[in-house]
Amino acid sequence: MKSGRDHRVPLSPAAMAILKEARRLDPHQGEIVFPSRQTNTQLSDMTLSAVPKRIDLNVTVHGFRSTFRDWSEEATSFPHEVKEAALAHVVKNKAEAAYRRTDLFEKRRKLMDEWGRYILQTP
Image 1 (tube, rainbow, N blue to C red):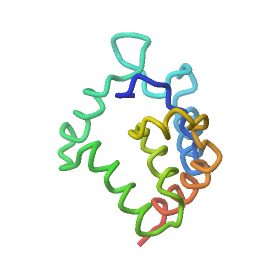
Image 2 (tube, helix red, strand yellow):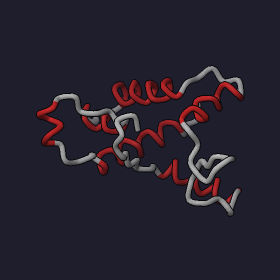
Image 3 (tube, rainbow, N blue to C red):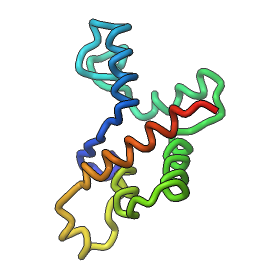
C-alpha cells in the first residue's frame, strides 16, 4: 500500500467464488492470485493499471475506488471510519491515529459483503 503498511482485505463470498473458479481453471496456480509472468511475484500496480487500456476500457483503478466510495456513501450506513479503512486510507489526525489499534476488519467484512452483492446484481 502507499502508506507502507500491510492492509488486510476481507473477501466477500462473491470474491471467494471468483477466486475458486480461477483456481479451478488453473489448478497449478500458486499462492499468488495475480502472478507476474517474469517472476514468482505479484503483478505490479503499473501492470494492473495497464490492463484496462490494453483491452480498450476507458477506466482507471482510481475510478474503481471512487465508485466504491460513492456507493458506500449513498447506499450504506457504515461509519465513515469503516469506509476509509476499506480504502486503506491513513488516519490523518495524529491523536486519533495514536489510539486506533484496530483495522476494523469484521466491520469491513460486512461492508465488502454488501459491495459483493451489489456488484453482482443484474440489471
